[in-house]
Image (tube, rainbow, N blue to C red; front, side, top):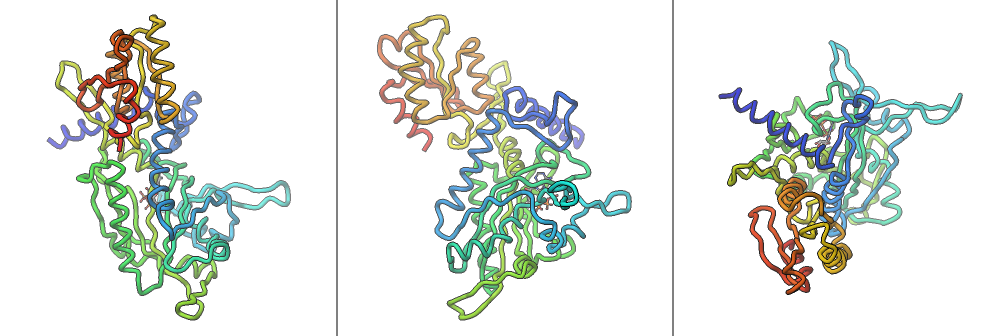
Amino acid sequence: MKEEKNNESDKLMEKIVSLCKRRGFIFQGSEIYGGLAGTFDWGHFGVALKNNIKQNWWKKFVDSRRDMYGVDAAILMRQEVWQATGHVANFADPLDGKQFNTMLKTQVGAGEEAATSYLRPETAQGMFVNFKNTVDAFHPKLPFGMAQIGKAFRNEIAPRDFLFRQREFEQMEIEYFIRSEDWEKYFEYWKEEMLSWMEELGLDMAKVHELEVPDADRAHYSKRTIDFEFDFPFGRKELFGLAYRTDFDLSTHKLEYIDEDAGGKIVPHVIEPSMGVDRAVLALLVSSYTEDTKSDEVRGYLKFKPNIAPIICAVSPLLKNKSELVEYANLKVYAPLKAVFGRVAWDDNGNIGKRYRRQDEIGTPFCIVVDFDTLEDNTVTVRDRDTGEQERVKVSDLQDYIKERIS
Ligand code: ATP
């Protein structure tokens, strides 16, 4: 029974990995030279999906709030940053009884001027080292946060499970600065915010679980950590983390804050919601991959929400060698939709059945077909990805129709 389940899970991962390659989402890094383990390259639809996820995150946690300040810090930082935080001494995994430091080391500068530097293993420190700059520039009152999306690098000993454990990946992190007495309140608050974002993204919430990380497994600076775990096909594993980091980081960098309300200098405490972009993509792929076995042929599709899908709709002339259909589809349907929605595809490759299959696999919610009736009555067929149902919609109503369906 267990073996059967493992086979099913392996098959699901294989299907997702091959769909991602076949449809131009994600490729192995350096593939034509044999691949570089722990790295992936993102193709057209993968970039679109990833950008939608990041924009959605930024909109919720930065743009729609008054208390959040964005940062985009340099990936290369002075060695002292990582010495101060303890990363140089302790950011290590066990390897044959020894400790192997997983920071990727590099040299900055030439000749005698060359200094050791590291590709940052987390985005968090890029925010802490800009705490003073942010306070001086914007004079925020507590509580307030800093947010960053960016690459992080870890020389993982055993990269594996597709996007799950990579050597180069992306993080979306928030450092939320509070007064120490408020930590429990804001910990709960951020837990709920993270859960609501996962739901908005379209994750299968039945697969999301909270793990209270026990004392012995927590980072030394953390007084409380929750891992949000996800039932990936290869097991229940960490998706995101939420940590109460106390005043560890700001104290380490000798940073303070003048609290006018309390009338003196304090070191704010920090709640840190930390989310991996790549694990978010993988969890979303697992949540969205659906197989429809209604007909003889299995139809696999990605059930993305329209706001997250790489393509909102695809436009097709029924036949690509009928110039009147192609012209109508191009000028009266594709061009105006493309101008409004951007993420609109032109698809005239193969027969209609093949086009539907392709768009289903990409996760495109709507396929619009221009046929001979269109030339007579200015209506088109709109096919729904999930139900396969088709309806006739007036060309003049298309924009409103799509806006309504995606809202
Ligand atoms: P793990 O225990 O799986 O190694 P971690 O606890 O070291 O993860 P954090 O340091 O808390 O991870 O990093 C924050 C987030 O960054 C994680 O929740 C995850 O989403 C993401 N992340 C961490 N390491 C990797 C990696 N090697 N590949 C992809 N994403 C990662």
